[in-house]
Image (tube, rainbow, N blue to C red; front, side, top):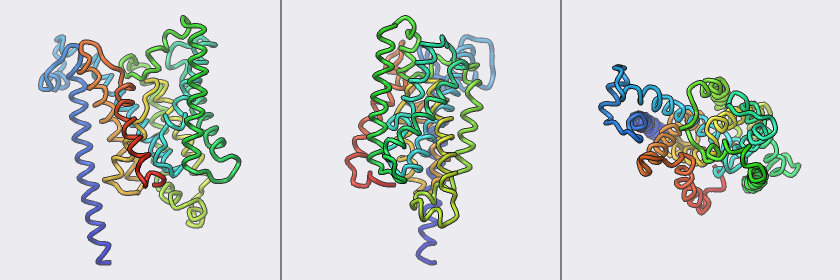
Length: 341
């Protein structure tokens, strides 16, 4: 008892400190997001017009352009971050995220089909294609990686996800090349951006993302048991099959909805759960909570970076996160402990 008490106190202190750090980072990045752009404002001025719409040009820029963009970045950041945490917990694979396991590629491929063959041009039109593609890709990766067995190794999941992503990206690229005019609208979308989606389109997808977050919260406790192995989890009373199905539903809603809004933004779901695990330990309830707060901060920081370094233009947030995430993935692969959570 005396040995565990200091550890519990230390863990609680680390979690509290981490939560304060993340909330501070989220607040700062949100303020910077409404401040910087082609027409930069000082953070003080941006803060003033957030509280008082005075009809000036600065007020118009903040309220009609940057604030909706900031809210979108926070929303899809939370979606991708929590989706990554769920995938890592369900597969017991620390190298998993919606991009690497092909979930985003499945959603993107389905959207490509919706645009090319059904003439869909808005988020409200192809959101169902995105969700269907994400769900099918998630199931396919698991089936391919398991090879018909009841269990699947983390390495096989990664290989299956990378292979499926390559196939889907290749077919989608082929379709775009043979009919460039039809798929012209997808050219910039596939790079991953939060700049071209309006508030109305965000509101269309919002119920799906909120539903995915709610399901993730519901199964968070059961994920702690699954981390011990399916057999032990079942002996502890956890309904493993139900938890996995609900997890797939949550990942589909979060990754599919996020991809429909912003295109291919990868590595957020890979990096964030690893970072927050330093503060939270292995408890999935805390990991999901932290991921829902830390991922939006990372998304906004990447977006602001792309706007600042390429002013008066900008670099899509998906490119910035890829530049950051690729070295992180390499570092994780080289770690001995990267084979398990």
